[in-house]
Image 1: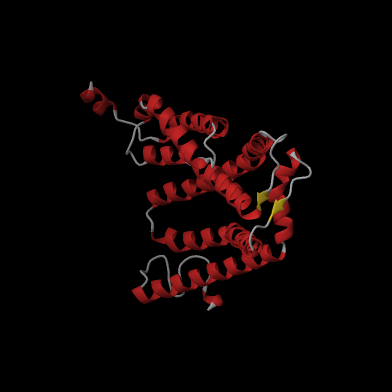
Image 2: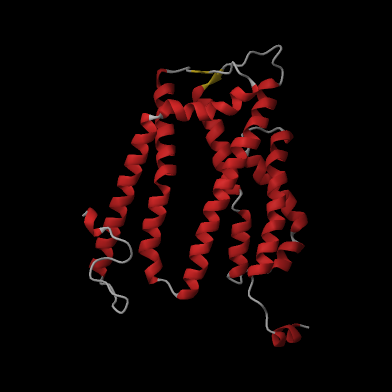
Length: 261
């Protein structure tokens, strides 16, 4: 089975032939099998190094408060945290293999125009996702923890549960990473001719409200400090998305422009 999971279309396929339904299903089975094996291996690796990964997740808090520790309030809290580390880490580690298998299955059946949109678009999605997650880990997370854990620390002792801390960190990192896809979505919609850059520019006042609503959803706390930390960069990304949309949108013919005038 593994030997059949080769690069490109399935066995017996040539550029001039069409695959039968059975051949498509066999290839899909092999691609899913390889992706599942990659996910299992990635998860096992993260399970093995869970203490190291937990140290990475605690590092932003310990940079602000060197004596910071997390507590377990339930017998299931520890195993739950380790399970999350293994599963989420496995998804991250196996994602290159999974993305490759998806592309290898889909791309041969696309037209040349669709390939020009899909492949660069997917690359941009990965880049902006990683950039958002890195920004959340190194910028937003330390600042948020410094503000939240330092507020009233003279009167209130910080006893943070490991489950609550893991939920806070993963929600913030994943949420900010996904929100950084805003310019990619804007660029793709403009490339497909669904929206013009001029329309995005005319919407900028409303975009500010929408962006800060998104920031309020992404940040686990209601304070304006953390919302601004997320909303400010998103606003800059919105204007970057306008620039991408202007560069990628289909150019209107002069005749069409004259008719419009």
